[in-house]
Amino acid sequence: MTADRILHLLRSPVASPAAAHRRGPLRPQRVGLPSGKRRVAVACSSSTEEDGMTYKDAGVDIDAGTELVRRIRKMAPWIGGFGGLLGHKDDYLVLSTDGVGTKLKLAFETGIHDTVGIDLVAMSVNDILTSGAKPLGFLDYIATSKLDVDIAEKVIKGIVDGCEQADCILKGGETAEMPGFYAEGEYDLCGFAVGVVEKDKVIDGKNIVEGDILIGLPSSGVHSNGFSLVRRVLDKSGLSLTDLLPRNDGKTTTVGEALMAPTVIYVKQVLEIISKGGVKGLAHITGGGFTDNIPRVFPKGLGAKIFTGSWEVPPVFKWLQQVGKIEDAEMMRTFNMGVGMVLVVSKETADRIVEESSPAYRIGEVIKGEGVHYV
Image (cartoon, rainbow, N blue to C red; front, side):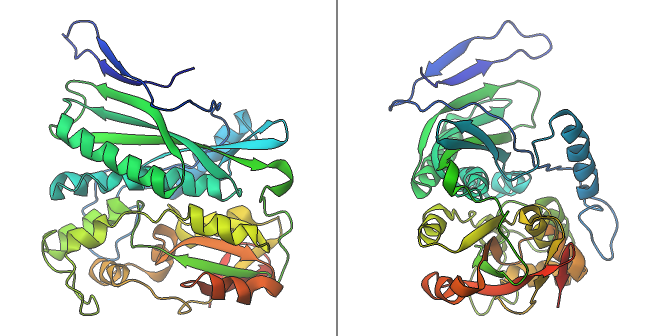
């Protein structure tokens, strides 16, 4: 079976029927069936409020997204994890899909198109990694009103780079050209990943107990979530994307460079950690931040105590919070705050994992109760 990139020349309201051109993959395909995973992300225009900015004011209602997932669970009770598991003989295929969100708006403004493909791969492969799965293959979807071949090539180059970092293969995808649907010069991206883990090695959090340790792996910055709020803060700051980022520890990084830093792909590092034992759960810190993502891996009746100040918060987050006058709780529920992946490990293995995974931070512990508590 082949997996082709299909260029759909879809109709505008008065256009002629579509034509299609196909591109086949260079390597044999592994077949996977999508199922199970659901995480809501909403991208909207910004609000006009000036003080104490929130993600909701910027147009993104996390609570509405959570309500949608609750309703979907009535129809598909098995969804809600970072990845969807599909049993196949002695293995689970783990599937995930995601996009890059309104970070793409900054790509359009900066002209940086070769790293958003890395973001696209990262968002899905990091999710399937939370089950202990090794990524196998990736598919992409690019949609635009008028195809710019040079820009699309840059995007796909980033996707290929991301797949190399994740040790998986780009198997194909689809490019949809839809006149009149997107603003001139803009496009949207979606990615789909499949991985595999042996059934007796799946990481599902069921063995997590009170006293287990939370270890954080550093992010590269904002990654690919919270950009509706980021863009609103940027507008308020009066800075351009080519201005230097303030309070950046003496580093000459522009605002655009800091915000466009590609999402870290944790696959090789985390699979190496898992292979040595002690990992009971994994949380990919994306939309919802620490507050909503860490509890997703816990058994009922357990929560997390987070030691604020136990890791280095990148200057970009301090700048966002200062300019936007954003409350601490809002920051922790919107951004990764410098930690892109959280490992839940046994107390006996925590010191070894931190030492062998440097840089890594011991950021908290599992406690009785529910939710995430910051101390």
